[in-house]
Length: 494
Image (cartoon, rainbow, N blue to C red; front, side, top):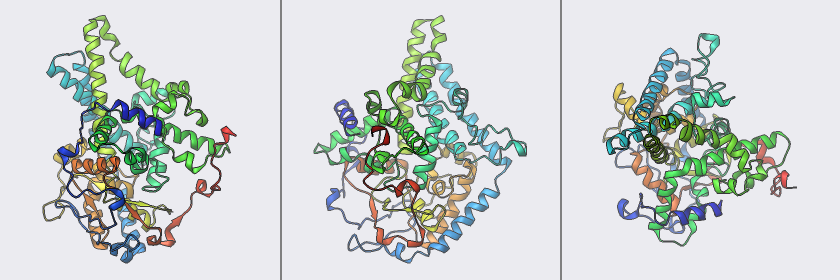
């Protein structure tokens, strides 16, 4: 991981500082070793509850000390159950409408992909990048979580296509038809749906940004250069980091099922593209050829070679323009998805945790809230902090361009709900948190981007939720966490 980030750093030396400290301001930022737990979760726009100022790192926050975990669990669980039971045909119709919107952008990209004029190129890049981004974040994401399993079940008259068991998984044909991207859908399901969601903010969370960026955070480099690294990473993170790391988590799961020993340290190590290409992934059974054939190859060949190939029959210039537009759209899609994904659980007002917790427990719901941040949601929030009523078309437009990732609090509390249900859930979940004093963070996505960049470069750090603060009854140990601590090697190396 460290070698890969060094390679990235060298390549980013000349990158423009998309998130430079000069552009975004450094007021109030402190070095990690100077920070205490006295960090306010107050937002001038959208924060509901404020965590108390702490005298020391060992002092339990007032809200955590006073939280009635069973009561909080009961209200959250009842909300999720009520919304789940109320889902039906309207949710499937809404899904199909969002798919149509996404495909509309894809059609725009396809119709203009041959153009090299500034306007034509802009239309093609916007079309392809938005199609790619929303196909993952909005459609593949919620379907793979099972948000439409019951509504589209063939037993009840559905098609079965929009269920977690069939969407994009099982064959290359399904992957190409439903969700063709750099990541293998089966690998994404393991890394995201299981590990990230049920170990949110823990060391076992593969998407814990603060840990994954540890090398850059601790490097003695000028801050503008570090922010430049973040900008470069944003432009290529799906194929550089996410595709190999999700596949690695799939391989770790498969190896453990086969009885091989994979230590926690090895399981948590982030694998990036240079690792894989230069043999660093062979101990996980993911050599360069295997990785390209199963994971990145289909996207690389079909999107960037096969799709524009017919234009060669018309003009080599059209083909060259199409390839250029596709490459640019991939960069834009990477940046778009980075802004709305990497920022969900990162910031100096987000908590990280020591131990795992029982799924669907009071602690589970508390962590879904305090280690997640919402962006602008469909209902919106007034200056006084009150949520506005839902509105239809404008709500969908807002949520569409956020990839429906602006409901991270509700999504992590209830991962198996439909997109339509999250619009309904947000005001009610917010009210429950306000009643119990649990900090609920909601801010503009670009403010969250700045907070994420600050974590990545080491300007700030996340809030540690001390082990002594945890609700003992909700603690849980997963099977892989029971391995002896000295098992530091993968069985394949033995």
